[in-house]
Amino acid sequence: MTRGRVVKLEILLDAYARGVRRAMAENKTKPTEKSVVAFVDSLPEQVRRTDAKALIKLMTGASGEKAKMWGPSIIGFGTYRYKYESGREGDTVLVGFSPRKAALVLYGVTGTEKAGSLLSKLGPHTTGKGCLYIKKLADIDLSTLEQLIAHSVAAKKRTA
Image (cartoon, rainbow, N blue to C red; front, side):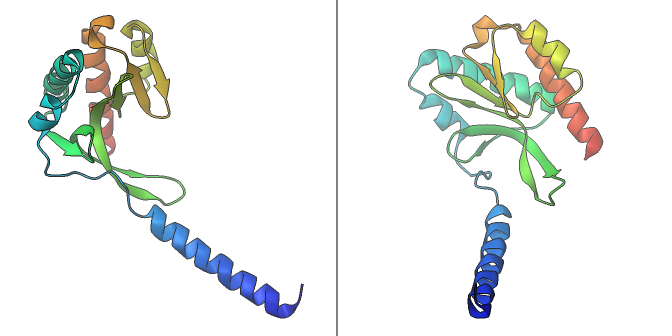
């Protein structure tokens, strides 16, 4: 490779790295002014509307925070500032959920020491990277879910 090509490659790599850092600096999902009530009322399935209302009550009680829309489909409670070892940082929901067609997706409830033992008592569910998937609330132990949410909120507030 000639010296000219090496310099061009270095310039391109530097520009790419700056662009990646810039792109990574801002979260896509942010709080909005959209109505939580209107969003829940617009859900097509009655069971999703009922479960969403129950989760709002449960998460409001466990977090002490009001429900707020984050992006078009996440109902969040409070804000949590995170920072990764890579240096990336941002704000996300303290806890929250999205009533999707296939499952209720709960955010911010699985990252504590006690989560494993509570999840084993919860009932049918799956987990993903930082998410808890539940088909419907009738299938699980709501008391255990409430404990899971409360432990997560308490752990995050201690580290804040």
